[in-house]
Length: 109
Image 1: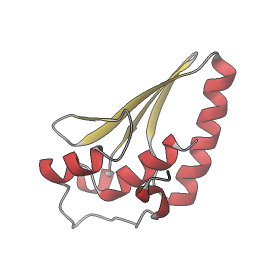
Image 2: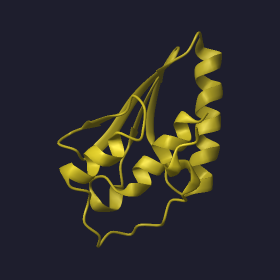
Image 3: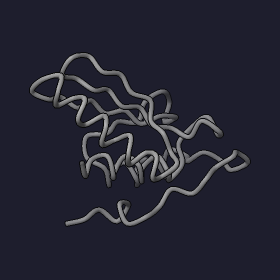
């Protein structure tokens, strides 16, 4: 079953909109697998583990293409076979629906 979030497109955000509150975060968090709301519900985080460095880097390359297509870019760290991904809307210093859309699309990789 395709996640409804994957059917959406990130909308450019230059600020001026409120970040999601805890109740909104909880509803959207239930729609993405394995992601955690961290830093007082201001960021999403997920750890991806691969067999080796090559697998991790292939994932990062695919994620970069999705991020560019959405115009919404995650923060990530690679440590050999582990990729930690953090997503939030920098312009509002917290979470927006865009973050959950990107998270769902990254999960689809």
